Image 1 (cartoon, helix red, strand yellow):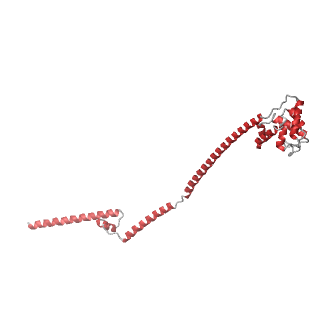
Image 2 (tube, rainbow, N blue to C red):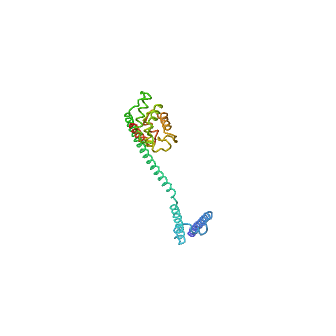
Image 3 (cartoon, rainbow, N blue to C red):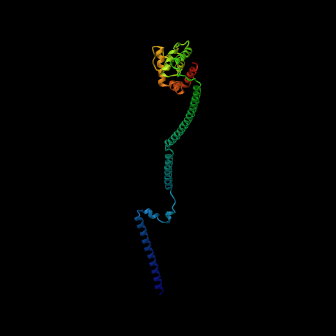
Length: 271
């Protein structure tokens, strides 16, 4: 009985060992099959497990890791250097050009505004001076005695012949009083006007720019004082009217009309 129990226990132990062995064989086969399916090698099978995770890193692996890190750092440095070397001068130049153009435009606008202000001030000043000159001219004209045409032709010519001859005495136009007086009567012009202009333009015929042209009239000369006087008085009547005015002076001598007006009017008052 004892022997039989001993044999049974021994058989049971053997069976357990056999079962463990079969289980181990099956487990090893499963592991090998999994690694083979994943494309692994026998060395990977040996490295599989906890021991593989705790195995020390070799110097070759460390060198490879360092090399990879170095390559990554080099690539980053290259990218940064490339970014730093990027040419931004054109962008800066464009901005500077725009700023310079804006500055120049602002300066030109300021100069234009200042020029307009100065021009406006000068125009206002000129207008004020013109009004003052016209007022002065009107006052001066008011002091010029009127010419009486109601006395008749004979009395008119006689009176003004004497006065004009006295005014022209000693000049190239001396003795032409009757010519001036007769022409003034015929054309209805102030008899003092043409003789006075001759003084303003040529010092009473002393400096004529054309023959017998003592008045700066037109661009031609005449053959005698009589012809010239009649032509000038007739021209005054047709272009300027009866007698001197400030407007007539502006038309007769545009460059220096104010002086021309005052000088001629002053001479008329002397006749």
